[in-house]
Image 1 (cartoon, rainbow, N blue to C red):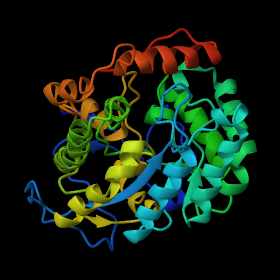
Image 2: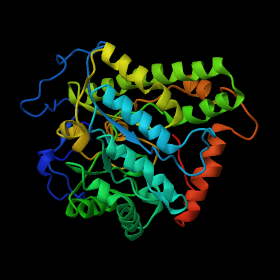
Image 3: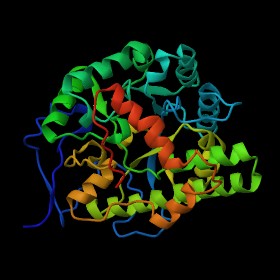
Image 4: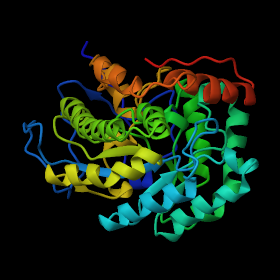
Length: 366
């Protein structure tokens, strides 16, 4: 039996309710899914050059960053949001979707300015839940309430977007296919579609090293971190593209993620320039969502993976990921006692988050 990756075979613009006890259609390895009719097709079927042109939809997550993750004293989420929004507009990317959880608004209501600034700049908002907890940490009813809490804070801004999108925290629609299906049906009833991530570059790993380098005032290391941020973004885009090409027989429009962070504020323009130099074409999220790599539903996986990585794992392929040596180099730059990257995330963000939602702390970085 060949390995099988199951997909929803439907026009993404009118997706049916999904019962994930069964899927409609299947993609067997060796069968080539085609892009929808009328797509221009950015590559020949066998073009796997490292610098070949690609199509991507840029999305921004959590410009009001997770509670517990430090920022420079002279920087606010609104400052970062305005800068990132302007850079996107400078590159003709008005109408970019941002997905930011709303938990910090409970104790810092002034942070609503960041959400408003994003919309005022001509960009769109989606729902990313309130707490930013993975589905497997919460009962179904609690997860739905968390979605609804986010709606209370920013629903009026979400309603202004041309399409209503939801993104799972960490892109982790985990728990089980049954639970995911129930959530997806609930979202569909409210007019939402799920916008996954099909290309990322572990940019969370750069946040603490850049903060430490700025705290130390080390300009050389700051530049080193920025340069690594840009080169890693490019390298990982093509790693994801190669995986999609292997799975689908042709390049697919990828939904690319970067977080709204201090380092992204300082490197987004060079990243977009590097993409353009390689012939990348920017498309809208609506356009990218027409391809099954984005509207399909790979099997759930409990590890920290994006949608394309889950497709790869289901097909028995290695997932596209940052190599360990590069990751270790990034994580250990500009060391400061008490500000270890992974310890900061675990002790200041994930463990308090698990406690807030009543979950046993259980996180798999693999």
